[in-house]
Image (cartoon, rainbow, N blue to C red):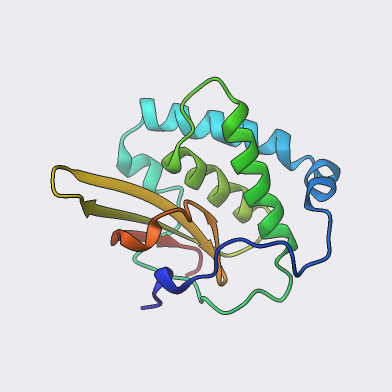
Length: 156
């Protein structure tokens, strides 16, 4: 099993591209808002089993090799993270992970959504994050301290 804790955090400095322009050109910001809304409604109204059926195959992990063309994954990450800050509903790690997973799938980019837990000495904390290739697309802050409890990857 690949270790998502070794994945590379998002960086655009070496790509030499304007991700904001790419996000706007492809309408990813609008897609992110819609996906975040659907994710929030799904979390509120549906059972986890129903939501999980939309995430991919349980316990399947996609390869963590560097992406040959990471611009699309980075653009999705930027769109989801920026949109999550501007919507009036809760859009934390779970909603962001669901939205990113669905947006990446629409672009035919394989990814793995992880669920993890961490005991901080007082309470059990939960976290969700998405990895695409060797990039953490959402939930990169602190994901390394969480023990993976489930993963959903694209594939057969």
